[in-house]
Length: 210
Image 1 (cartoon, rainbow, N blue to C red):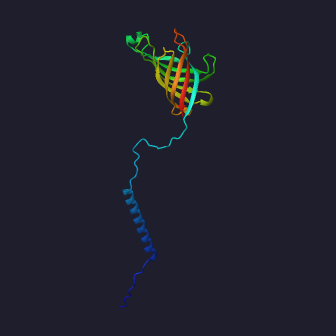
Image 2 (image 1 turned 90 degrees about the vertical axis):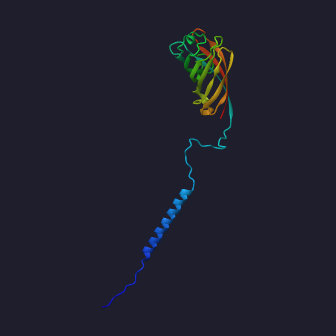
Image 3 (image 1 turned 180 degrees about the vertical axis):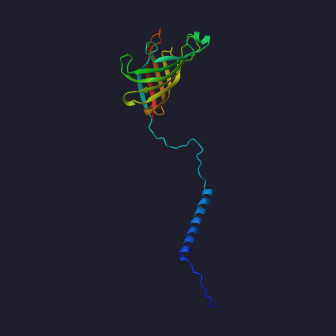
């Protein structure tokens, strides 16, 4: 009997494939190890601090207009939306506790035919317990609808001692071309109807903004 012995053959292609797979596995393991050791930022906070990222130039703008607060007639621009239930509040000469919503028009001059340049929307609250002093706390957004500042507004949040001849209100913010506004409004009543409460108030506003 003749026995034939065959030598094992080596598959060069198979060896290359095996080496390639081993290299891929090694690379994958290295990457996996790196991912477990490199700290990954976790976005668990709701804010991001930015250093030296705000370089806009501050500006100062002077505004002058008249504020028409109308409580009477068929189309008032200020309406009472709340009042106190207590007898004390109802009988107070200062109307303590009454809350008004407003959409008052802003005009270039004190005449009712003057050009409308914007409006003031917001609230004012009768806030004085002193029968000799009428004082309001006002929050109003003074927005402009024409000219350079069309679409922009300033926010006023302040005490308003309306029985004083000259008053000063705080400007606490703004939007549009009045971003990050601050400043003050000097006000003076030009007209007041003591029967129905209608008033025209002059505003001279100094605004610092970006």
